[in-house]
Image: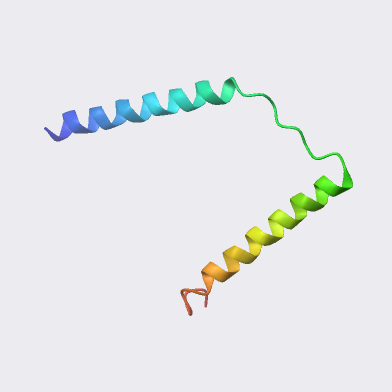
Length: 65
C-alpha cells in the first residue's frame, strides 16, 4: 500500500512539473523597465517587500539571534 501511494505521489508531481514547464514555455518574455519612473517603481516595490519582510521577522523576537 505504501509503495503504491508513493508511486501515485510521484506521478502527480511529475504531471504538475510537466504542466508548469509547458505553461512557462508558452509565456511571452518579460520586458525590463526602460524609463526612470518604471525603475523607481521597481525600487519602491523592492523596498516595500524588504520592509514587510523585516516587520514579519519582528513576530518572532529572538529567533534571529
